[in-house]
Picture: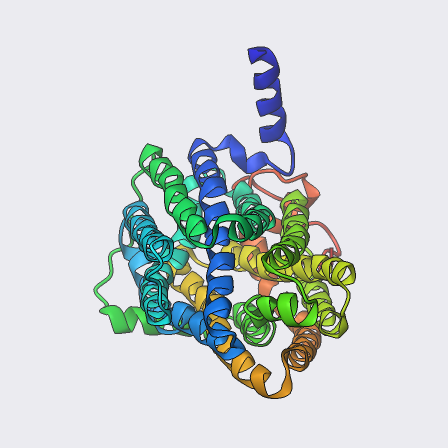
Length: 453
């Protein structure tokens, strides 16, 4: 039995999809996240259902999302500076502990029957403040867990796969749990799930990182990071597309209870299945990204995925059939995951190490920080012109954004090429993904970086 287990472990770690798991620290992180993220998605579904049950208002759904994610719009850039200067593992241990406390507080208030909307608002703000620090630090911390930087893209994709694998499992469990015992148990289980990731963080053996010494103050560091992202055109273009998709398309998640109850005439279990379908598509997209051996070709997939996401939202907004809606959401989830995941991998590949935390904080601000603004607008306008109409408009903007990005690809390829050459990324493709640190010979007629696969 032990022999079979070792062979299975060796197979998983040596395969293209799971190669990042050969790094011990990342295995610990991966395992802890698998547990924690299921609880996170259970809480998100339970929170949406609880708010809609108490208020029967799409506006309140959008408002709760806004106050829970708005801190990312202004706090994450400063969190990025912290990630570039401080011990990232200690910060994550603190943020995960605070999130656990928030989940237990929600569980206590809900189970005892004392939960009110204003308490949900306060706890959502608290979670948003903590999460605004946690996300950019966690994104930057991935590079410390991977000894061989050739596996960095795979690690990022696997991280997305467990996030969306949890999104496949968590909502389904939450839908059943809400129907049987109420929302409180979902909050309780989420609180307990943080224990896994906290144990994983303290079990890691992280080599001491040498942080670049700087005499600049916080505002100067922030300006430096903003200037770097703005003047490097590929990063700027990717961030703008992420912001567009997040603002106009991502509110579909917050509006899902409205579709489940008012459009499809279902209940909590319907909501769970719809979210599970989107999670299945996203999980498939994450596995697809993890199976890729290079960042070459990501530009094309960013265009395809964002277009698929927008088209899927338009079709979903027109559907009044449960099973058709589930099928469409699989494609919506796939498009969303590939667009966001490919953007993350690309940025992490080309960014300079001493600016990684600040740039990833901008990524977080565009992805997470714009979503609450979109949710607030979508919820408010949805009560006036109808949620399906709002979703159709958002989908059209996502399609338009992808077309504008596609027009810029040739210019982005020219700016990205020198970075890929410097880091040996193009030769890695020709030499079957050998170490970027090895000497290389530039392949002839290879101008396919970033745009073509």
